[in-house]
Length: 237
Image 1 (cartoon, helix red, strand yellow):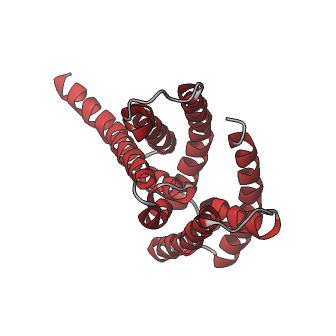
Image 2 (cartoon, one colour):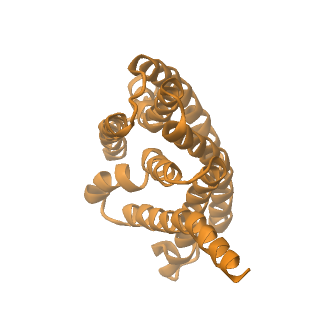
Image 3 (spheres, rainbow, N blue to C red):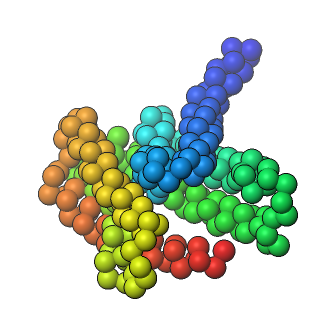
């Protein structure tokens, strides 16, 4: 009985610790990327404070989960812990609160609404990413190709939406903020392609390249539309 309890504890630790540790590290890295000067932040944001970065970490943690259930838990847990860490640091350690000046009337309320919004996003996004990671690791050649293609579309969605929005919708001046967003997007796209390339090389047996490309194209279009809706909601928070 004692041995069974010990094994149960070890099993729980193996399932819980990776998403918790990854989530805390991801949230802290994203917060740090927001604090550094803009000249440095534009290089850190794609790797630590973007939809691409958070999705890659969630997929990586979920990929090594033993079962589908643990992969789903890993995906949700990683993103949820990262969200709580990131907004917890904003509320407690940001310069706005440490300066001693009075915060905006709805400053804390805005943080709470944003964290609630992204926690809901963590639930749905984590389930999707966890499922895709598990299917890519254990599925057939065709299903693994679909999973990787959908994942690639999700990874490039934010960057592709940013480029299209600035190219065809944005009517304001091309200031430093806009160029920073373009620069961040320009870095995310090759990083996503590199991640997919590594996954294609590591997967044995190899996936169907034709299925992968078709799934990636459809997923990218859907992901761009999703980021449009996300940005509309974010503007109201």
